[in-house]
Length: 287
Image (cartoon, rainbow, N blue to C red; front, side, top):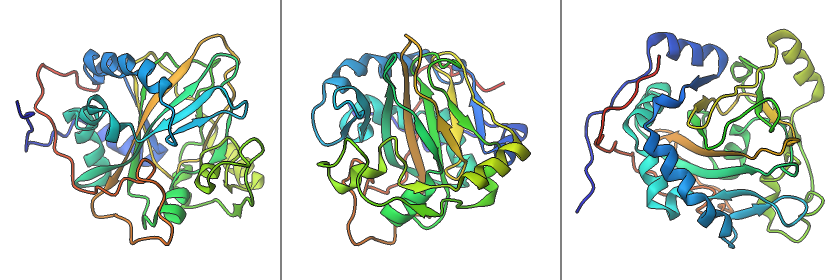
């Protein structure tokens, strides 16, 4: 049967939540924001995703532990359906002010004891320089597939740093250690950031705005701006930290073209606006 789609776009974020996102650059929504089936569908896919052995999979520097797998919304119908969840899609549309498509999707694994760090960086500069996306009219939607605690490598943000624009001033040359034989585009996906932010900028912003590490149970949804400065420590715990990240971009903000496009699993060329699926049950609303 053809899947059901709705032309009604829900606006689930209150004015308070919308204003908080504009101020801080992120929102942490509770596990009941999405239906429990979303979490179950994503978790059920993980064994198959971990077994994938193609260029969309990126390993840690040990060349054995899976770090990330990209392009999931293109490969798995279950993930494609999650991207069109009416509450998730509605929230993102509110934040960017119109229709969106998924520019990139991935699962980031932080394996117990071996999940590596992510250095301080902003996301938008990668999409600007590598994919030709002109403005930071994107939203990262991160769905916690495991509980995220202070011990297993949560994201750390500098609240409000997104309002400073692009801060990444240094371009690191060459391939990071352990990835010397990988394709050039892999250098944008490793623990050593390609576009570095000067430590003096990080120091100034952190002292002024503070540091925050959003944490919560599996099923929590973290929305954050692509210019928000963020990093994460290694996973020092025996507990896995896995998140599904969907990068939504405004359909009015598509690429103007680049000389060497990245693979479709990193920069989806399908820029048609997503339409929400018809809910099959009553969904929770943010409180």
